[in-house]
Length: 425
Image 1 (tube, one colour):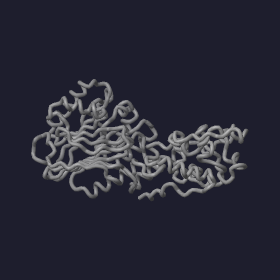
Image 2 (spheres, one colour; image 1 turned 120 degrees about the vertical axis):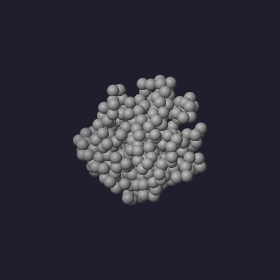
Image 3 (tube, helix red, strand yellow; image 1 turned 90 degrees about the horizontal axis):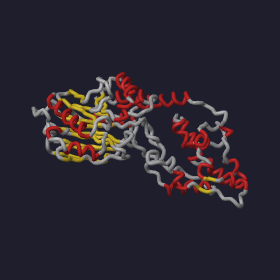
Image 4 (cartoon, helix red, strand yellow; image 1 turned 180 degrees about the horizontal axis):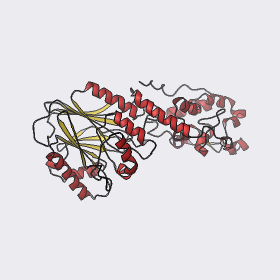
């Protein structure tokens, strides 16, 4: 796991209550923006994110970090009702103290609220769902002699001036309640958040801002006008920590949730989820053979060596790879199999499956009718990137992959493009 950024500040955290420092050190962990993302895709290597990886990181943090610990989830849990229960169950195992709701969470509260409640997960938002008393404007976490207040700001029913007033009033209420630290989780974007804070007096600003972003990575922690800023990458790809020592010195760091140990219990829950999804989908498609396109068998007569080499290539084994991992579900099959990509039906159990000649070449049917006069057209980089996105293949190298694919097309079996994934645990 790669630590991307850290920041050490000698000054004490602003104690909103102005009282004596709390006993022992305080450590806060920030994560979130799950967005239905239970685990990293695994294609292309070095994918970031995943609840099981985050579970292992937080377990290590709890074991090695002294003092009081608070876990704050940045919300935006996702829209898929079938994934919300397993997401909430995992968050409860992570020891999340409060979920700072996003605008999407607020919109989906009728289905999200009962799921969070079932796992005793508290929620907060300055713009709560209409008529929903269970969602408070601020949540106070009181533990180990510390009182930490958490607020969430989202776009929605409040105009900027009203949201500014709500934020200032929320921090003021936390101060009146004797909180040591106010944390704002902002889903408003950097510019809007900075503008809101700039118009508030210093005593009504939070001590820490966690900014939800659409980035694949995380920015270094930064100090601005007495406020510590952290960022959270999309799809749960990063975590951040703030440690406060007895002498007031604080250290902030942010890191990607990259390859590393997994929480075995969370892995089992996620595996079970995919098993149930797989069982709920059709295990065989009687119409698969009716999906018409030029399959490798059509190319054998003229390109026998290429077809033989391709059938041993990783792309041609893409469905088998999913089956071995228990992830041969519709959400993954579209990139792993040409039959599914074209018609949304599973390939037959035997014969050619996976990425095939027709995946990379347009015009094969015309070429087969007139081989000498019509040449197929390669789909090129754009065609590859329809599946090899930054999210699915963050370290994908087009020139390297192209050389491997061309080698197979020229009849040369290719070695693995990436090292096998490290075992879980």
